[in-house]
Image (cartoon, rainbow, N blue to C red; front, top):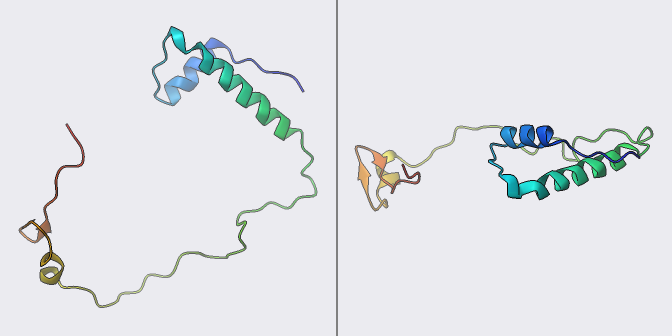
Length: 98
């Protein structure tokens, strides 16, 4: 197995793809990425030729149920317990700050 050391250009490229801003004090991240790459190389050396590909490890064929239209609450009933509503919609506090 050959050890791989990522270049600073490769680390910068990965940081850009990850939308991370790295500064000079983040040199350790390059070392950690190189270690992860080396670990993946170890996994690539395993002989998996006799192992069949797996897409579902728990042997379930389809975990999703089919959609069915069923009776539900009316809009009035759904909003009846809401602390605040406006023109037929729930009113909540903003979840994203500007």
